[in-house]
Length: 126
Length: 164
Image (cartoon, rainbow over all chains, first blue to last red; front, top):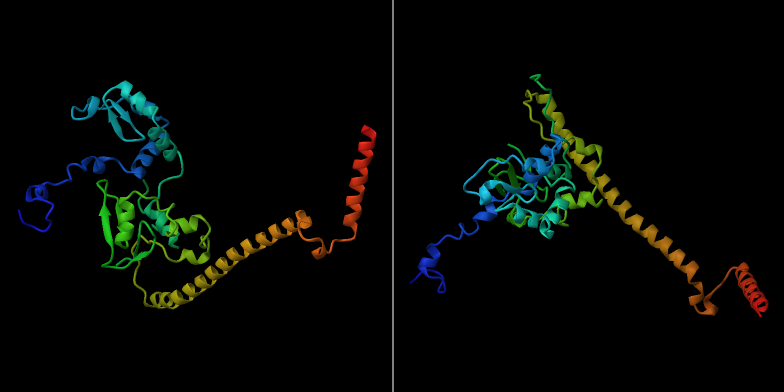
């Protein structure tokens, strides 16, 4: 016993809760997902095309074969994935991703009354 | 040395202030104070939080398009030092800031004025529509109006007669 907090024992304090929150850090951020979708759209593909050729990964659920691009989630099987597609959360996410681009540092700078960045002349013609 | 802008609220971050977050895809997020950092961690959208510059610009609260915004920008190229240019720049800064403040003030007064005129329009419309709601001794109706009322009543009586 002992320490600062009378209700929290030493053993409890030693445990890190970071591992419990691990999933929160692993989820891709909104703007990253948005960029990915934009890249796909430029290549002329849609989300269904991209999910057909996925690399096999033993550590992921369903060997990493059933992936939702919008929500950045892996599923155990096709049926679970389909169920996810029908969920409210997924539909909300799609709506969000088809809307305006997420806030960026450039937006923040423009709002602060700065002009567009000046990169000068292009020196290398590639 | 650069004066960066806060990712969340767009305020200026002076050296030694704020906190910086580098995501694992090497994107940098700078925050001016813990308030902005916390709001970022809560995944709030600065466009939807009313006290940020992004919200204010998006909703027409602040001036967005102005020639004074063209001076301050990120210049990603080296500039050869020139004493005269530096001197002129330093002289220009307070002048530009002053004009910007004046224009901003004007923008805000115009913004406020717009609401007033609309309110007046609404008041006039209401007065036209519901003038009968007032007590009769207070109304100074134009002379044509009672005539119109009489005409309508006559028509109604005629129609009633026809029906009968």
